Length: 335
Ligand code: AHG
Ligand code: MN
Ligand code: MN
Image (cartoon, rainbow, N blue to C red; front, side, top):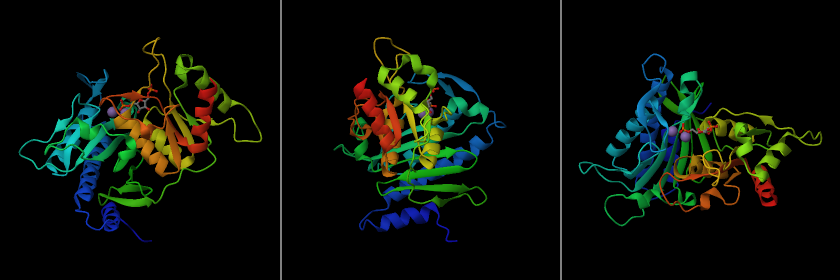
């Protein structure tokens, strides 16, 4: 069997772009390094006094878990020292993190959810890291918010790491989706899933159905449709919901499925709102989904076409098999 490490894979990709400086490859190595360090900490979380919450509430109004803080600080540390990044936007920071004047400024802006699904970590449920990379567009030497506030279709790269029964890194640069499994005995990510395509038919749906009564009519009708018995098709679909986007999306990517976090009236009766964040969750996941042959929408708009207005913007997200996501849009149109 031919073994290919993530480093070899990144170099192979780089060779397809003559003139590439290697800065981008270096940035991916840095992310892979941070992922290995977070994986190590997640694996010994029960022993290391790193489970549980801090006294802090983040910009999203959510309790910060110790692991959220650890993952965020570690990634910021590695990325700001690496010389490849001009700005970092993180779910855990209100404003962008600028590069300290003692360090080199690179040409990439990184947006990230350092630890996704962290409320599950105490129960040993898989968590993840999500990242999105844009090329610097601002004119100044240093990076600014403008470099992070770019639409999803302009991403140079998007990926996630899943800390599960094994640790996997899945990413795309716009030429397919590739997955690497960490071999902990040698500390290397090895290519294990080349050119991932979301399989048909779609058999799974993933949604927090406890929010049913807060949804609009179209969403209710669509989810009811998935549960109808129809011997001629795969309905009723199987419901699988972990409550950790990376894990729910990863399973659906490999097995076929649709994930929904629609707008709901849970917080504000007059204004339906999505929960997931455009820059840190929806846009990178949408890029990966489309590269795997799937699709992602708010219900009325392609996720990758949204022009971000602010760093912590939330959007409804429905992502998975294309025919299924388009069917959802159709149900919303009909109301
Ligand atoms: P995070 O841990 O980064 O705050 O993200 C949690 C998100 C996401 O992972 C998941 O899909 C969703 O919250 C689950 O929300 P509900 O508990 O409302 O279903
Ligand atoms: Mn998250
Ligand atoms: Mn998070």
